[in-house]
Length: 165
Image (cartoon, rainbow, N blue to C red; front, side):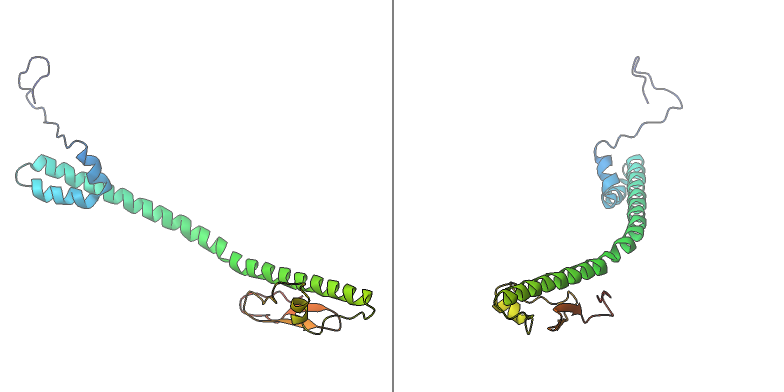
């Protein structure tokens, strides 16, 4: 290595290997660093070594980052996994409440007309225009309707969610 002031050779100094901006590439894409290691191995062993070191550093850093993300995911996934069942239960209960409200409106309209009664079936609510469609439980099963009381219950009590009213 030469002195930058006088230009004379400095004894015992190691030459600084400059890989340049391509070193960042070796770090981000380790495979490129390993390829350059084999390309430079004979002609420029110092650069080859630096390319290999940067590739291994990038590989190790990426591995640690993936492990860290995996650990965080392993803690978060079970926390959110139960939300699916809770969402289905809430949707089911909301459907039941909406159907019972429509039944109450049907009953009130029938009482005004002089014949107070609940609809015979849930389809009657659709026919009367009180609902857009007859919903099913999010688990895919129909609701049980009692036309004597106007109550709607879910027939699904096991499996996906348990929320009988």
